[in-house]
Image 1 (cartoon, one colour):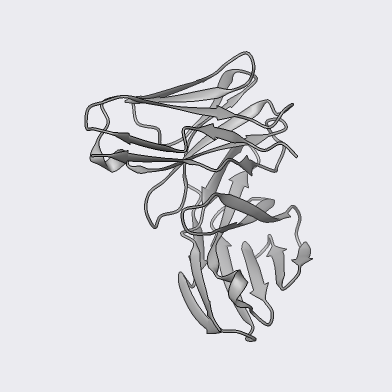
Image 2: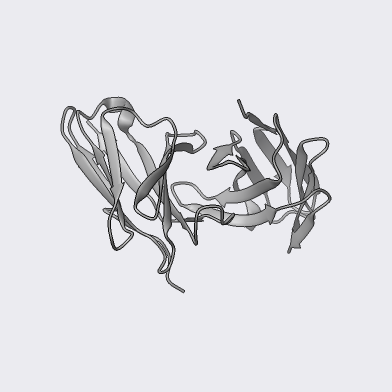
Length: 113
Length: 111
């Protein structure tokens, strides 16, 4: 069965650079969620999209932005990167908003040096 | 504000033993999730508990939900080494579909 795809899987950036993370949801899923997980921490919800519109917003810094495109894939854009942004970034998708099961992608490990 | 508390945060146990991980949450929610995470890996859905009294079992793991007590438990029976991982519980609100996570329980099972 198709799963959530994230790219890249690993990314190394320097401070003040920008990064773009991509997420391709499971086919027919119209809702995408982004989470950030620091080392040894629980995942923190960043933002979600439903039918290409932002639906919920969590602890996403102003330096970050995201969008969902017409093919339902989503991109998380991160600017002015800081050392503290180093983390695993997970994307999850669900069949629709309100569908209770979220399926997680493999994650993108971002390292900021 | 919804808070989710897990305990213990760290658990080291011998193979063959039984143990329980607890997950308390602070406000009304009818949906509780248990996930497993291996180091550096993604989050694997174990159980979704949707109603008061729900009980689900998969292999040596059994999860239950008491919405009145705002408590879920994950019970491990006759633990084996392969169950070593970090286990997270998470809760969402009816009107807000973001998951709020517990801090995770790091489980180490020694042969």
